[in-house]
Amino acid sequence: MFAEILPMLILAACFLALFGVAELLYHQFNVKPELTRKLVHLGTGLLTMLFPIFLTSHWQVLILCSSFLIILLLSLKFKLLPSINAIDRDSHGSILFPVAVYACFLMYTLLDKGVVIFYLPILILAICDPIAALTGKKFPFGTYQIGQCKKTISGSAAFFVCNLIVSAIVFYILKIQLESAVWNLIILSIVATIAEAISWKGSDNLSIPASVAITLSLIL
Image (cartoon, rainbow, N blue to C red; front, side):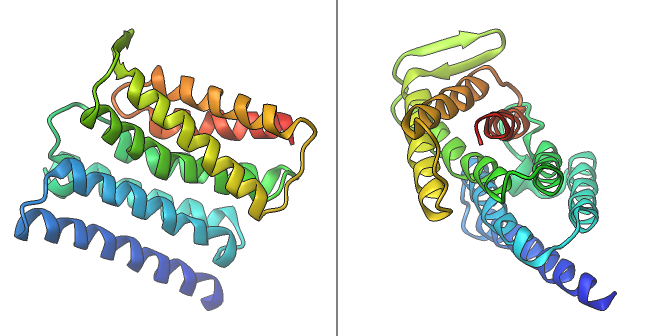
């Protein structure tokens, strides 16, 4: 029992430390919440890469994700963690992230598709989404709107290219070989880019990994 609890406690401490760093940057160094939020977004995504290594059951992941979901919900209710929540837009992204992580881990444990079905959706979300957002803000070229979603062509292009690169690297590292690999990577990147483009209020934290995981389950 202790052998199962210990890695959960270590990972939980790492997540809390990340939140602490973000709060320190926000309160002591006046770093804007958009940047500290993206730091947490990237950091939590990278930390979850340790889940398949240290956690053997989806129940462990469920407990971790549920615990942090409760923390994030309470932080919204009582206006805590401004480094994550003090942004000038309505977003549910922070509370959808742990849902996405557990869903991907559950798919990894239930489907015989390999660990890529967990790693790639979370990595694309953790890396490509912030890059797209930063690119869209820095170079706001070609603004467009789908429903309630206001995006930029520059941001979507950055997401697509980053997605393609990350996917190719992950496939190479995990030695995944597919027929028509290039076309499959392009299709995967297009699907994820569309999912990001049509999402609003932080729902891309769920739609991006879900679209990638589902596409992977079909092409692997």
